[in-house]
Length: 425
Image 1 (tube, one colour):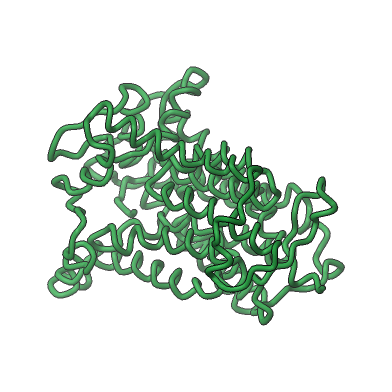
Image 2 (image 1 turned 30 degrees about the vertical axis):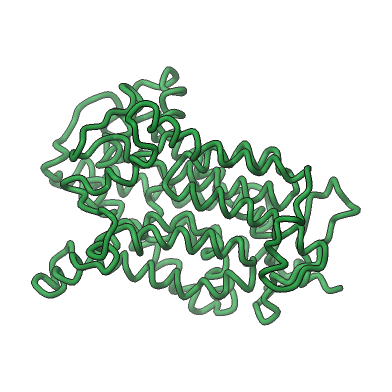
């Protein structure tokens, strides 16, 4: 059996160290042998060093936008505690998270309300707010710490499937992705969601189903994509169990009869989304209120053909093709399309469960927005796509030397704009 056809499991279980896996793309680039990978690239601290180095640039960019550019009318200059350095990270949805952390959830029919925002991030902020001067500073600290976890666990997870060179490139690619400024301190829930999601999947790969279920609770209560996480975690456990039994074909791979009692803890992850729905039902009478609230005036993203077929974007392209908002929406759409093109590689490299996860994330901007807006941010969590994109770049070093710096420059430009209050995602 070749190493290229195996899946790494927890070292503490040597008798089950290798499972037969058909989830590998035999034509994929495996990268150079370990001996050809620079020693520093495989150190435990390397992802943190990359994240911190780029973080200095992002903080400088947001600081510049906040302190040296004219502000968006929605965000006049503030002179509160820490606003010189932290004010640029508290934009748009940050106001909602502050309100939830301080006052809890409210709902007003037909009006934008805080029930649209899932609870993990604001609850964590509330629990830690005693330690910091303001809610916003607390949120920034939570985001930075979560992102540090993301880059460390991303490399650990990736190295179970690909070479160290590809895993390192995946970390670098995520750190400079044009919308990754959200990972460097912005008071949004994305970083915490990604950290818990990838953490849960990594624990599944190491056969730590109980801990995967517990971490999964935080992920599934973190964002609407939590529904996809809950499903994909269970599918991955079923898939791995049946692969170990020599299953072939999709039907055999996902035969639930292959599960054992030891696999049951993974279902704990459903308590996150289940608890959130139960809370909405008890307090407001609608367990799916987070869906219906999207149709509120101003958001205008209720389910239906006008949203699914992007009528709003088509009107913008017809009447205002060169407006900043139109070009922004098109850019988000291109990110979504790019992710779709990577789906076949995700399937070949990681299997069906991760494919379901990625498709679920893509479906949010594809089917849940009227103009793709937010797609770049929503897909930050599509870490399997990041890894297969890194594989392509490792196989093309000259292209990598162009893509990574160009992406970094785009991210810094957007970070400056976000610092002044521009609405970008």
